[in-house]
Amino acid sequence: MANMTISEAHQEAENHWRQELKRAKQCFEERQRDIDLTFQAAALLSGAGFEVPPFSTWAPWNGFTLLVQRQDLKRLHDVLGRLKLSGKSVADCKKRTICISLNAVNYPPITIEYITKLARSAKCKIVTQRQKAYTYKTLVCEA
Image 1: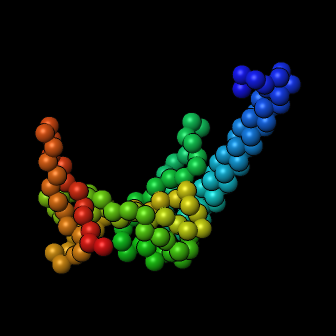
Image 2: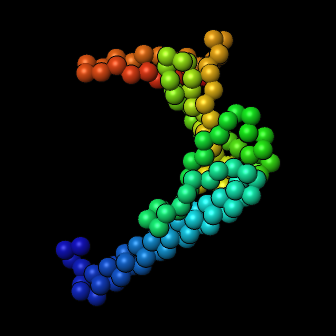
Image 3: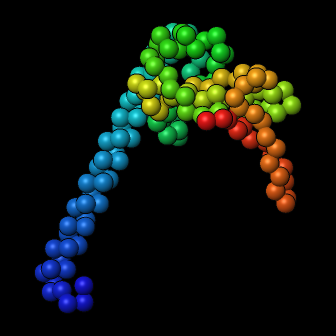
């Protein structure tokens, strides 16, 4: 860079600026797609009788999480299409309940969660983790 002419430096700066502009445009298009999918899914869900979280003027509008009962999963599948497991976490370790998170494949910004009791024979176990300052519970699953 020290041996560049002014015109070479100007050209490099312009190329860098164009790349940044291209990345920003891609991010904007992805966000716009997520917002469109969020509102489409919200309309479908409310039409099917699900209570959709309220939208506000300051919200990001690019997705939401819907907490449902396990027996509602079939109806959700009928409305949104395929649901893919995205995570599991401990909801209440004393009651041995876990939170299952699912993503709608056709509506990626939408997360569906339900709470279920962990069976004694399950492949996952609630494990106590101890640090110097605190103790916490995590869910550990067999591969």
